[in-house]
Amino acid sequence: MDFSKLVELYEELENTSSGNKLREILAEFFKQVPKEDLAVITYLTLGKISAEYESAVLGLADKTVLKAISVAGGVESSKVKKLMQEQGDAGLVAEIILKKKPTTLVPLGKLTVTELFQKLHQIVETSGTGSQEKKTNILVTLLQKSPAKGAKYIARIALGTLRMGVAEMTVLDALAIAYTKEKKNKEYLEKAYNICPDVGIIAETIAKKGLKGLAKIEISVGRPIKMMLAQRVSQLEDVHKKIPGKFAVEGKYDGERVQAHKDNNGKITLFSRRLENNTNQFPDLVKYLEKQISAKTFIIEAEILAIDEKGEPQPFQVLMQRRRKNDIQEYIKKIPVQAKVFDILYLDGKTVFQEPFENRITLLKKIVKQSKHLTLTEQIITDNLETVESFFQKMLKEGYEGIMMKSLQGEYQAGTRGWNWIKWKKDYLQDLNDTLDLVVVGAFYGKGRRSGTYGALLCAAYDQKNDQFLTVCKLGTGLTDELLAELPQKMKKYLLKKRAARLVVKKEMEADVWFTPHLVVEVLGAELTKSPFHTLGLALRFPRFLRFREKNAEQATTKKELEEMFER
Ligand code: AMP
Image (cartoon, rainbow, N blue to C red; front, side):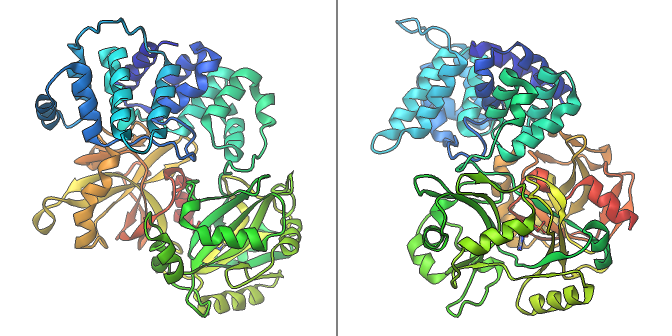
């Protein structure tokens, strides 16, 4: 397919500010796309060149992209720089400059979507001496071959800032409409996506093999599975209503979740909760897994904690120092880790995540050889709430944040906040019994001491049913001066020209700047009240910032959860 067709789509999407309309436009487009181009188109439309979890990420520096624009347009770099200062967006600069691009001696031909995709991959894969120049050259060719309007999007994709307002869930909705004629069939696409979080594969499968083909998609070692999340109850007694009979109770430590995969060649890959490949960060853990798990292939899940020399757990902030690109060996010694293994999803060529949890525990006990650095999570099995309560108190004393109660018969519900897992944390709120994880969707400029940065952040919850973000509070308290000073820089990547299409706001909450729903913050609040100013219909009173969370926007607290909390 010609890239110019995709450019027409992007122009239409860019002029749309309603989430529903985005879906319709995308669905119409998907219907007409040659099936073999579909995967590539879904990646590009999300501003990517591979599945979310793969490390092929574009994010060239402004400088590189501006250089390519100046070469492709045959314009002096000082002129390009000046335009950039005026426009503030390399995409617009590319469009303006390339409108008057010089004709080349040899006609370049039309740019196809496949060629664009391959060349963008080449850019990512080029490394070593002279790579900067090679990358720029590839980009120059792309800009020259593209129509001027397309240059705008190429520049943005290269920078990693396409932001069409389309997210993975929007694509799944549109695919359901285009290939099954029923939006409600998205449920099946989402189910497949939870065990294969690669929109390209989902798109190609539904287009070529329909819903039947989709149901056959299986777990594949080396490709992460979307992680299961836990539900919450407002009083411990409610656990019995959700999980009849005996259940497993485990310590819930506040560390970093990891999904570890070992493939047929013995290669181990680690994925974070956001499904990012973070193997390079934990070479020590890779060794422990190699030595202490006796299985040819596996997918297991664990919580990583920092420990001291005696093996005592350290606070979350200590572990955070392991999140680094440099001095890894030094930090392995300085901050040793322990992985507390709590689940197994795949073992020796067989998918086991749908087996009852009690069978999975048995498998884990068989294959994990425990040490200070790799252990099984503390666990008891009971149906007695007094026993649960005393286990909970014991865990708190040992530095845990709470417990997890898990159904022994339950399967691992990939990508779902399911009732097979119920969390119970220490009450650190007066009225609400848990903190909220909210998405930062906008910001208001600060005044006085906060001038020059943001004074407050507009936060939203996720409406799963409609794939939308609904605002619930303005957050200013708890943000230290240091943090505030860093915020504009931290948020730069997510800045938008206008409100995100999936965000719904009342006019009273029109923010000064808008962000792509991405960053999640943990917020403590006093109570929920009805509110005409927030689109959720509820407002969180006296919100206080606690910390940034490693979650995707769609993993934030949901509208449904907040409504249930309010009811309680
Ligand atoms: P929350 O982030 O509050 O929804 O709690 C779920 C998180 O608790 C998981 O993503 C894990 O990172 C963490 N966790 C700690 N211990 C366990 C455990 N025993 N089982 C499952 N998750 C655990």
